[in-house]
View 1 (spheres, rainbow, N blue to C red):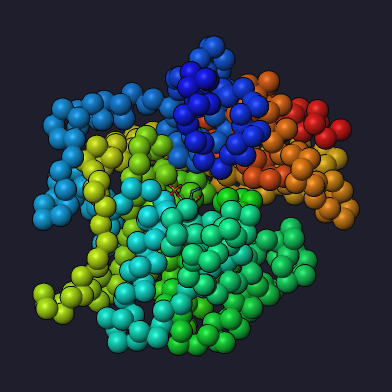
View 2 (cartoon, rainbow, N blue to C red):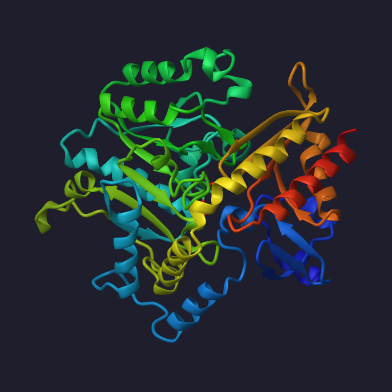
Length: 444
Ligand code: PMP
């Protein structure tokens, strides 16, 4: 398997030379919060199958729903038809997302969910007779996916810089990365959220030009699990209202319970104009995505045939009944497991365990928002000097963690903790203890 993998799989985000020199672990089974390799080793899945898994691997109830759907209908199309599972799921998504989001556009992954939102916002203003509103505001260190539209609104130069000549230019606003404040201020309590004031200055200097603002609510994921201060998201919503800019919330990573609430926007009591969902929508089982929009956005696309107000975007597997059946089974489990009600205990356990990491010599910052956390490792805590990229400290810590039965992935020098929401408090102990030992071994 390793040989075939090495010869034929082009892995995403992988430095090919280093990958080829490494011994890949071949995962063959999943069970609850655990994944099992071809040699029978078990690892606690600290990344929830790349931020997707909710109820644990191979949940019986979801498996059964998938099997039942396979025997009824595997796929048809939403072009000129609908299907029962897509219709029921759309209704339920409209019920559970922040009030006002009522139209569901299906696609296949997080990147396309965001891209759909960007295209909707762009076209919306043309139909509203304001075509000059055609630009987008996005944030530094934002990640919205890897298709060209999603990369255009991204802000991570390491990933996106090489494609710059292919992208449409966006207006970048400083992200509230409080540990390394872009405005040169201190803690959120003391700074008065100068980054929000800066965002307003940016909006004013581009008055009448901006179609939409794209944001990862509460936590910027791939940029380093950067947790926004309370009130920031609400402030962004207010500014978008004041300047008549559509707010596109990318809940691809934080949706479906990750922050402790079903949706991150719900935690700050706001409704975006457009919301992108994927990853957790099928609890990590399969590709499915949804972009939700308000009635106001949808209505702008209604018109006579000749007016050509159509939203010209669509994917072959849009509204796939297998994906929708699995998503429905996952929503049922949220209810029957009382998953959200059980989260505060786990969130507190994680918080308590993370306290122990703050003591470690090379831990600069520990951030947490609900069931997502990150540990930023630095060479020098006093100056916040980072470890050099070439030292690959994050990679080495995660490799060491495997020897303690924990699978984690770094984002540079940031170690991400993003387990299935079904993780138990005992497993949280195991995970953070394994991480602590690994940080000590590598950095001390
Ligand atoms: N948006 C966010 C916030 C994400 O975290 C990701 C994936 N990490 C994406 C979009 C892209 O999703 P996908 O990889 O499914 O295209």
